[in-house]
Length: 112
Image: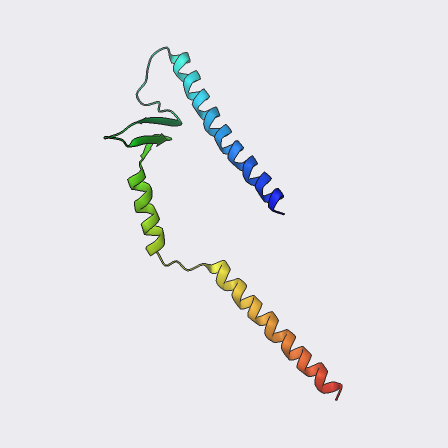
């Protein structure tokens, strides 16, 4: 099971980078076709130097830094969200468990 999950994860990662590479190639092709640099055409994925030792990454034209990622992680940790599917699954599980216990008790009373 672990090998299967690992293979699926590896395939998903390869596909993700394949899509980014394809978008970058399409961008290069559009620039070659135009014949000049158009500032409105941004690369799919670019790495550059930031302030000091920091590196900046740009994904689909939006700059991503380590500070942004830390802020998003803090927001996710602080957010208390309600998961409908989790709640529905818990309710269904409790219903099935209670029903099975009631059936068991009913059958055990019939056998006495």
